[in-house]
Amino acid sequence: MILAIDHGNYAMKTPNFSFVAGISEHTVKPPMADEILEYEGKYWTLTGNRLSYMRDKTQDNRYFILTLFAAAKELEAAGKLTAFEQIDLAVGLPPEHYGSLKSKFAQYFKKPDPVRFVYKDKPIQIMIRNVLGYPQAYAAVIPHASQLLHTVRMFIIDIGGYTTDVLLLRNGKPDLQFCRSLEMGVITMNNEIIRKVSALHDMKIEDDHISAVLRGEKTILPADVVETIRQATQMHTKDTLNKLRELQVDLRSNPAIFIGGGSILFRDFLEKSSLVAQAEFVEDPKANAVGYQILAKKQLGYPLI
Image (tube, rainbow, N blue to C red; front, side, top):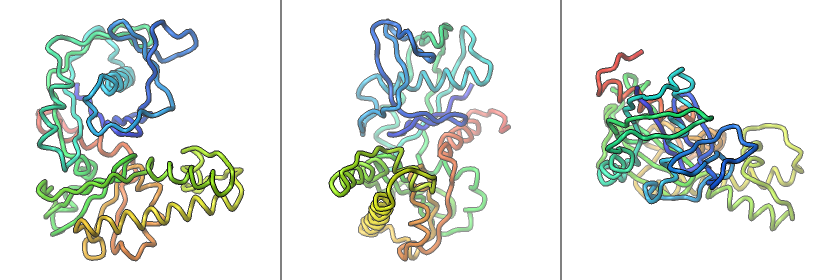
């Protein structure tokens, strides 16, 4: 079975699921939780509080635990919560660090023996037999690859939680010699907006409030707070585009495909910006995971259905 996972700073994504990249460790089994994972003598539950930003996600075992949650969800959805399952794990790597991180990710996830854990009181064993790494951003446009073959130059802009990653496509093929990354994303912007709203309006808001405003959803926030959120987002979008120009990513002269959760939130501001000439948007936040699955199937000879 192929298990494709996008290990995001804000959320974990598989082709069928997206959940906040937050977990809580327990020494005894929590009495009130429904979704409990037991691994190596400890109990873990998912939380709505995301992990702090980690540039290197292999520095401790928390992203491995999140991977087990993702595996369990996909196995359950496929009706395969059996005693043993062999897994081909397809993951993504930042294009700028693809070469240096590929082997490190493989060592982090691949174990010499089956991984044993319990999910929702059901014992599971998985054998991770292959770890396949693919460039983030490029994977998200794989379903549209045939449409990109005749585009001489195009940028893919992946706006995530903590970073904005850029990959250049030449005639539909990724140029891994031209990769750019900014440590600017939705979470960094939200932190600044939360501080600004507190200072200007003496009100405490959270990430969910900001997302709701940017999605055009109805809230009970005062109009001046909503306006502060929108103005700060517009400024953040402009700052991001200007910093990309400093890195030779000029979207006035090159078309772009925007992906990632941030692109969905910033779409209105990106489409109206004079710094963006032509833009398309991949709105599925799970698009990278879907792309990893397609690439892995092709590489391993699975049927593409």
